[in-house]
Length: 393
Image 1: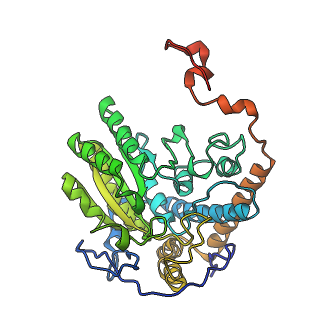
Image 2: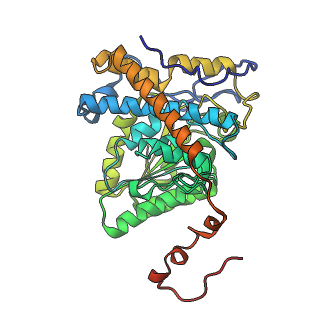
Image 3: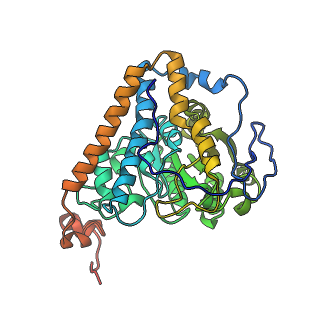
């Protein structure tokens, strides 16, 4: 059997081990965890009923394969990005999505034409999940003119309005009120759509997040606030940084909430689908906490030496890797075989390499580009309608 491994990433650093205790259970009750422990995913004993949910049963064979393909493409893109960063082809920050792939793929696979996505700075997975071109994504990492943000945004600022993807935001929690704003616009225009505002567990204590919760509930906005809880924020375990469970805070704002096993793509789809339908049809917000895990540090610059053990990372890779889990499910369903698995992996590696070659060959922005894309009317003077004087210091 073909093994989708992480051999293209450097060896993990050896750090002291500590005990990990689950902080989440399927009955949504809280369990006290040691200060150093990362929260674990909800445990489902026996067959997971989410796999038999209508939204999953309705998938064709080709659609199931495409979901798996996206998981692999994200993983290989991230690994190739890491190699480029280590070769000093990428400047600034690089926040990798390795380990969290099922969250973005599962959520974005449910999008309709009037649904919108906004996220934080760990945005590569979401960009690929909504269908952005990996060549433009890699070129953006390289700071090249052919990048999706013309080389001005880098890793943290992917955008594609044509696909209803609104970034890529570097300020912790700053995208969450904007997600509420997307939902407000949908409701104001009478459009039956929903907005998904993704954030990390490190953002949940920001004041702007709670302000967005409050307004979304008061105004019945069609927004799903998605907390991607990878357990450690920037480098501090959730147990040391955040009191209580994260999803249940929604109850204080009279919003529906849910906890989801983010390693299981079928479960992500099964539990997100009714919330998105409710948002579209009833204009009701919700908060979901998707339990996931990142294999790498907060960013590539994070040495990841002090806050978790090598054995903890290896345990997640061995037992909860979203690609391995979904591959096993599709093998059991007769959707995948060893030949197709190898083909998908080979194609994903080739795509990532081609994207890097494209980025390498692309030009850097010229100095004249620096004042473009600041004011729309400055770039389109013939269509300007405002008064006053446009100027740059």
